[in-house]
Length: 173
View (cartoon, rainbow, N blue to C red):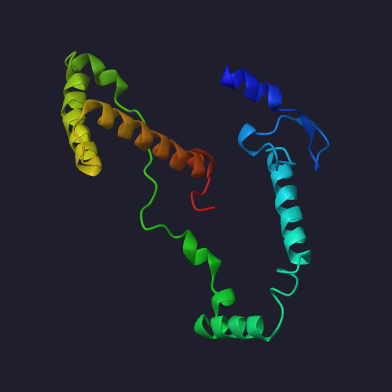
């Protein structure tokens, strides 16, 4: 019943940036004037900054002797900051690990049926032990939850650094 009332109170609005109708978030319905689309959020941020800089509080915030002295002190403490070679940050402490290409596929008939299972069964206790030590929990539900977070994090890292070594891509670009 409460959910129905909440939906009834929400009214569609026109975004101040893109002029499209949207349904404001129920937790922020009184203040939200922009959609959650990235371009609209950027416009909202710029409008908020503009409003603050034009207010009494923000009008001279970045001007005046106090700010000039602060910037000069920071520049003295960080000499050459803007001259640093940005490419130095591209050198990773650890190179990306690439999966090895599958080879010797013709030898599968020589292997036992349970060879892969043996490898997996020796890796699983290791993985479970590492997760238990990292999380400090040995409960199955906690390990499953942590495993999901680790997998999501790993997928995020792989998405950030995705490239094709076969096409001559550089992992540090």
